[in-house]
Length: 162
Image (cartoon, rainbow, N blue to C red; front, side, top):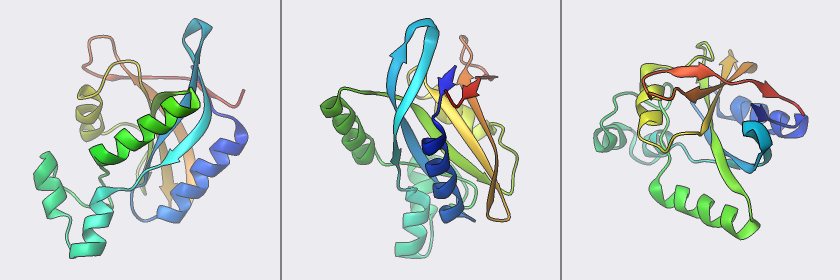
């Protein structure tokens, strides 16, 4: 189970609304507790490299080609390794852990896509993956997922306010 306090959920939802109609991405950080509970105490907003490429170059093709994923910032996200290393360093300095990731699905359901599964399969097991659907610019359903033990699918993970 992941615990996401209401103020942090509001922050995530605001990030999703601000980023619409593009996918946004971020990191959940906090503490692991007994019984497999993950308590989020901080969010780190990420920079969607697909969107950055579109703004700088007028195209996200370079990003997609570099990571082997087709698409645009409207239906894909990617954070740079440098950004992840910076977030990891900030977490270490604050004595907290990276617990998982969040992103949005603009005008699509908040369930994992095949691309979401491929990304999760390339990380370490145990991370939470939250998906917020944003419908016509309005944040809607927030769901959370965890990679199955055999890493072939996602399983729903309860997300609670406290």
